[in-house]
Image (cartoon, rainbow, N blue to C red):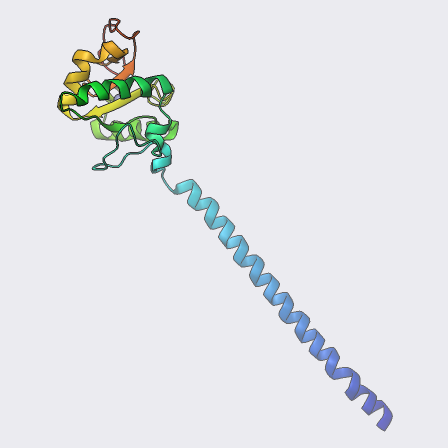
Length: 199
Ligand SMILES: [Zn+2]
């Protein structure tokens, strides 16, 4: 009797302790899995409902940010077509002799950014037809291919409208005084402008 009690007292406590330990471990794993599942569901749900917001990596140049053609670390400038960028630099050098400087307000844009701009314009004008006169769809936009640049200020725009063809640079939309593309040979004649981005 004494022996069996002694044996029991030796054997039972560790068994109970082990059970408790296993139970606690099980509870911990279950809690961990539940937490993981919650995080995953939340992440999936958030990704589905968080609206796209353009970032510099999409070609965004924030309002008020001053970007020039020399800012090649800025994706909007870095991802411009090389020939367009070179032509613009040559034009800028000559314009600088007349005291002018070019600032880039938009250059290359990701398709997502272009779509976001279009969606924004559709909201603004409450009309997709009107919005498309100002913002091209991603598959038609020359900003998405890196073949267009928007330049300010006004005196730089007017200078490019007058002298851009020397470098092959042309205003391509009649309703966008700021929007330029490489559209002729250097020294050539710019093609007739399209009425707007929908044209
Ligand atoms: Zn443009």
